[in-house]
Amino acid sequence: MKERITRINRTLFELETGILLFGMVCQLFVFPVKDKAEYSLGLWIGILTAMAGAFHMWWSLDRALDLDEKAAVSKMSTHNILRYVAITIVLALTAVSRIANPLSAFLGIMSLKASAYMQFITKKISYLVYGEEILPPLVEEPVEEQDR
Image (cartoon, rainbow, N blue to C red):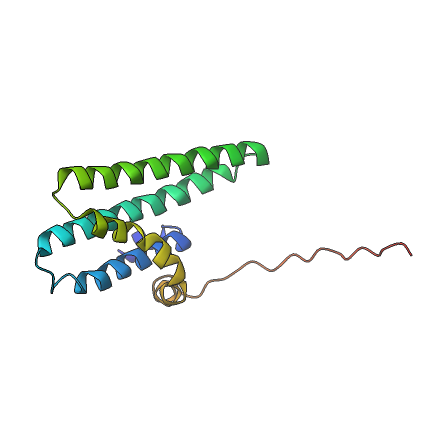
C-alpha cells in the first residue's frame, strides 16, 4: 500500500489528505443536524468533487509544463474553465435533484481551499508516509555588475 501511495505526486498527496481531513472534521458537525443523510451526502459529494478537481489541477499543470509559455497559458486556462464548469454542474445537479444539500456540497468543494491552508499539517503526514523530502540544490544566478 505504501508503495502505491508513494507513486503519487507528494504535493497532490498532501492536498488530497487535507481535503479528506477537512471532510472528516466537517462530518463531526453533521451529527447534531436533523437531516444527517442529506447533509452528509452533500458534504461527501463536494469532497469527492474537490479531490477530482485537485487531481485534474495536478494533471493539467503537469502536462502544461512541457509546453512553451503561450501554449501553457492557453492550455491551463482551458482546463481551469473545464474544472469550473464541472464544479458548477455538480452543484446544479445537487440543487436540482434535492437528494443532497447543495450548501454542504459547496462546503465540501471549498475543502480544496482549506486543504491549501492546512499545508503545515499535511506536510507532517507526508513526512510520515514519504520520509524526508530531499530537494535538489538551489541554482544561484550570477550577480551581474552594473556599469557605473
